[in-house]
Image (spheres, rainbow, N blue to C red):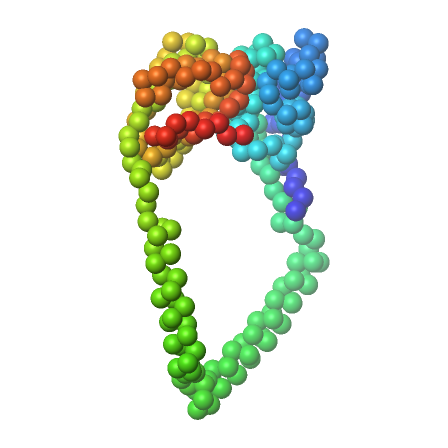
Amino acid sequence: MSWVIRPIGGERSLQEQEPLGKFLKREREGKNITLRELAKKTKVKEHFLKAIEEDRYDLLPSPIYVKGFLSAYAKNVGLDFHEVLLRYEQSFKKVEILPLEVRPPVEHLKKTRINVKHIWIVLSVVAIALLITYFFHPYLSSPPMEPPSKKLERDQIVSSIAPTQVKEVSPGVEGKPFSLDLKALEETWIQIKVNSQLPTEALFKVGERGSYRANDRIELLIGNAGGLDIIFNGKLLERFGRSGEVVKLVFTSQGVERKR
């Protein structure tokens, strides 16, 4: 399916402010930084950075990851992340993405309506015929009987695999509580999900702290891996990346795992 971007409230509203991608590209080129150099510094793939500069949001992952990319971009180009984030959020308010298929030609719509009428007539006739057959045919008024031999064979198979199924779904040894404390050394954007709760976002400024407790898992997405101290169960962990690098971590009572 192909997509088209249509302005809300007319074309003039889109021209009132420079697009985010054009603004970022101009600032980057003004500091003589190539896309390849920026990709190495931010650890964000070059084609994602190019999509951001071209305002091709359809080529990017979910907005949660895009905010992390923008945080790393702004830090390595020397921009104010608050301004970049504001421009990004405003870009979604100014445009809406509509599939081209929702605007078919008028002639095609007329033909489609005629075809739908014909289909409904055929379906109605078929349904009436099935009802008549069901109520007046002596053999279809009740469900067919299953042969006893096949039923016995099936019951034996089910009884033989039942213990294995129960063993697989039985819960393991989980539920041990653990703690996670965060301290910002640099301005850092994070997204955090505790147990089965909905994920929340926060922008930590220098010196700000956050404490979290869980008995299942904590998923942490960091927009600036080098700007955050992570204390797991009272123990300070080593940094999982450099300043401006985006990382995703999963904490359980067994330890921590880094996700790509």
